[in-house]
Image (cartoon, rainbow, N blue to C red; front, side):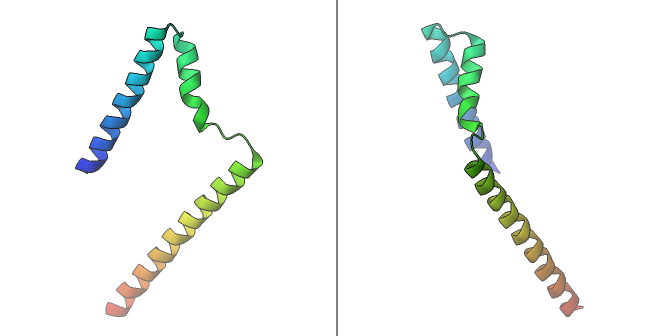
Length: 77
């Protein structure tokens, strides 16, 4: 938990540093936020397909883990 908090704190401070540097260079606030969000935009069909494959993989992995855990609990009872 401590590691996650430190990572979030460092990430927030880095974003704040970038925003402050942009303000110091004279970029408007709307331009700063648009520039910060640009890497997170999904731009093509390939990106959507890869993101979907990863999502399906993690869902299947979670379901299989749940089923195995349920089977272990039933066999112990």
